[in-house]
Image (spheres, rainbow, N blue to C red):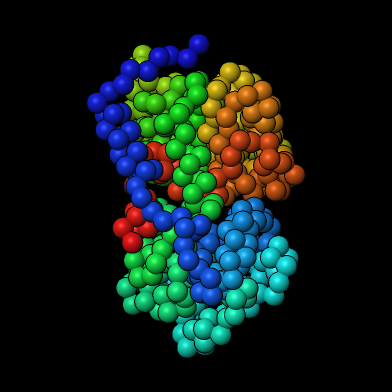
Length: 421
């Protein structure tokens, strides 16, 4: 049985803030007059690219309905996006050109690539577009004005079109020029995927099904602490993996060997665990055993050890069998599951076992009637890498950090910009 939650004044305040975030008014793409116009689509095509090849198409294909709708209405399409973190400098290692063949395949038409983010040549290509034609612009983050939300850079982007459509939920928590500044310069609207994200993710707070379970992993505590704090009040159980779990293990006084963890968050992890022991708070589950090795590669010898036996040069790269079974039992009884982040060093097959078991358990629970919401770039990459179907879940968010911040009740700058435009 899950525990009945008492509603504190803090939770009421956060719920009110969340409703403000969800229900603020913005224009829908379907309400816009776009015939004969150039529509600037802010997309979230920050996908895994290796050796010039796109490794994961999920985020691209998720925006296909929006792109097809725009083109079917007699408009032309100017697509803006970013790739990686080139730190405001042109770095061809982060070029978006490899995305072009994917766009041409799914849109079934030629796609022109603008090799410069802004400038006379890019503006010329945009203004030459005819209805039904598509222009894909080079990495926005090649210009420092993107991440600094420079008004002049936003003006240059606005010159590329007549209407602005934000369908990059994955980046809505960023106060960037193409997300916030541009929305205030042109008639603006939310894309079909963005609307879907808002509708589906709002259910976690507005219509939670009990028991409400959070499965969270990743490298940085900073981005995960707010959602853990939220779920302590509104959820029933929290399952931890990855480097976050290592930090909590260190907070419990265990030796984590050479494992990556964040010493500066150990005290806060201790406070969160103490908070979880209160009757009206969610339970925080940390690993009881772990898969350790001397290095994260396929040839390294691995051992499954109780966490109290980890010493010396051992590094934690996955959760162990005992912990997996505990986590699966929590999944089996859940009514709603939110999952963000693989539980181990999934890129190496021998450390992907726990994530595979969790994925299978969530898929089975969903088939049995649970609501499952899955998101995060690494989570989606895991599914593509090992052939696990994302169709097994109720909803797959294109966002990682944005998904967590939205569910956590934060106001996302890009959504607020749409509401004020």
